[in-house]
Length: 115
Image 1 (cartoon, rainbow, N blue to C red):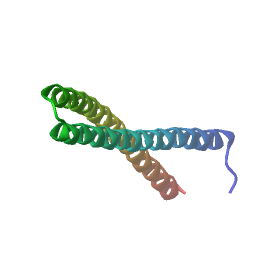
Image 2 (image 1 turned 45 degrees about the vertical axis):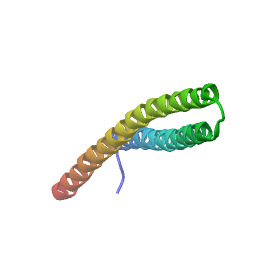
Image 3 (image 1 turned 45 degrees about the horizontal axis):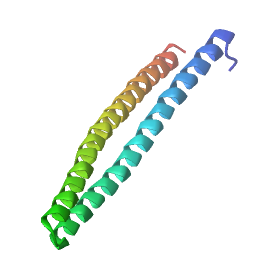
Image 4 (image 1 turned 30 degrees about the horizontal axis):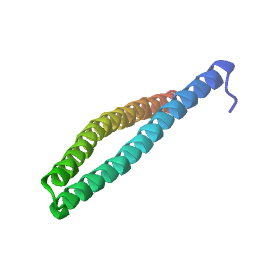
């Protein structure tokens, strides 16, 4: 079965859109992973600072370690927000891919019925 130029062009456009959406999904998935790894690092550093404050000899040293730990925790909270934004982007991309896939399947089924 030969396809017309218009049909081939529509197929190419569908493939391009599908690739862009798939690419955006992969991008957001990588961003979520990266933010999660950075978050784990920050929490680990904060824990280390808090543990160091327990072992410190003077009140000043304890306070400095606690302040450093709180700074790391603030960074961790920020990274959680970044991660949530990326998860939202990932979910949206996946939803758009699914919606487009549903439309493509419906279009294909309609095309087969008319033939």
